[in-house]
Length: 210
Image (cartoon, rainbow, N blue to C red; front, side, top):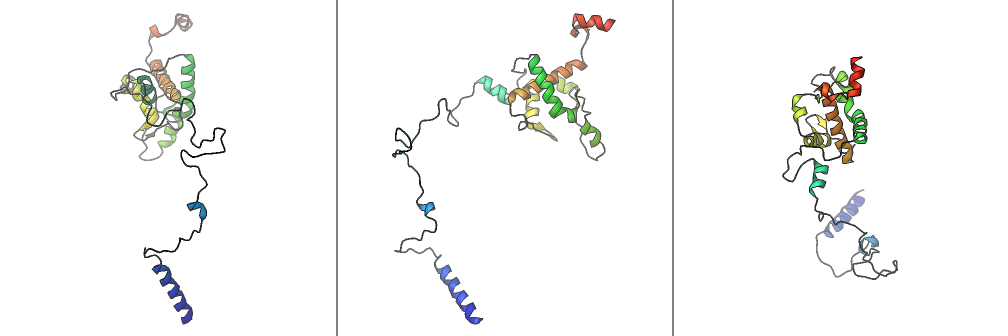
């Protein structure tokens, strides 16, 4: 038993001695040759794999190098909801039409209505069950004066990045058009709760009066 211990101790000391960082005239031991001799083509070298024999390839057409793209004002607004000075834009940059509103309604019902309800009053199904838990923060109603007077860019930022206990939905809605469509639909909901007679089309007024 003592001999085994002595041998083990001796081997350990030899290993530790080899880790002292001293130089040696002997060539290094390559346990994995791929780590030292990788199969690769260096810049400006020949490469028989391609017809032109070059290792370095031309970028794909219309490629934009990282960090070299100068965003236009329109790009910035659509992506962030903010102008060049960093302030929220007042109006939705997209064209508001029936198709956009329909898309906004659909996305709102999927991602927003569970908490805010389909009419946006903050009394969705999650709110009903959440009231049973202490400390639950009720979702905001989109009909409160503060949000009715807020800029469209602010609403877009909230949809994208969240606020307070509400998470952002940029991951679920990677297409910026969908987020702006939700903003447009929120405005429809707000208008629906504060509409007056002048907002009702003439043909619809006749039906109401009957």
